[in-house]
Length: 164
Length: 69
Image (cartoon, rainbow over all chains, first blue to last red; front, side, top):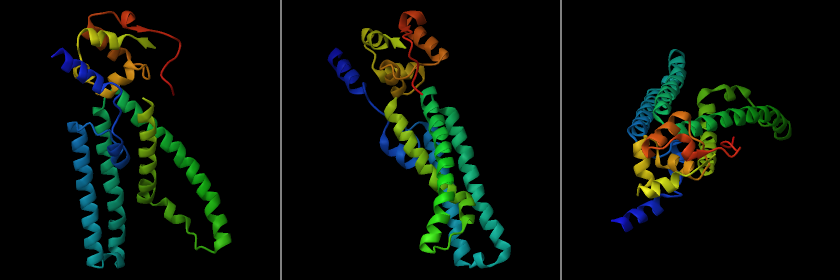
């Protein structure tokens, strides 16, 4: 019994956060009820968005002016819902996990600012060289920012998870 | 901050997971505290002290370095 205990203790010591859920989902992979709920809700939201895109394209709704705001609003609505669920997930974390999530978000914010500043310089510059039809408007789309910033947050979270 | 959490845990034959369950934190949090990579909050320090029936000062000793930022 004592030997089993010693073995168990030596196995758990030095254990780190799992890399896969951090890089894929930006969470720690502890399989807690809060994590499972967050993942499920994200999947539901993603399925609704994907279903709506399929319906919109199959019924040619994107060509009709009246549906364009509805399509645009759905993206914002889905991401707002995911953000709300993420907030609920954060409240369930223990203090170190929450600290790491907040640190990752802070670093993501700073990285995003730096990225935006560099894109503002590099894109017009590359346009003059390559004659690429640069349209800064696409940078304002919320889904674009979400899909760029989420991997950055996951990368920061991974880096922080190796530190603690 | 230095601590003797590992020694106290070994004395009671508790695994990191057992202690984490009692403290209502993750196993990785216990590991980070033990390896002195993370300084716990006051409330968690009180919980740790209660589990081992010691005072906070007996478990944690300041060494001038806080959690890295």
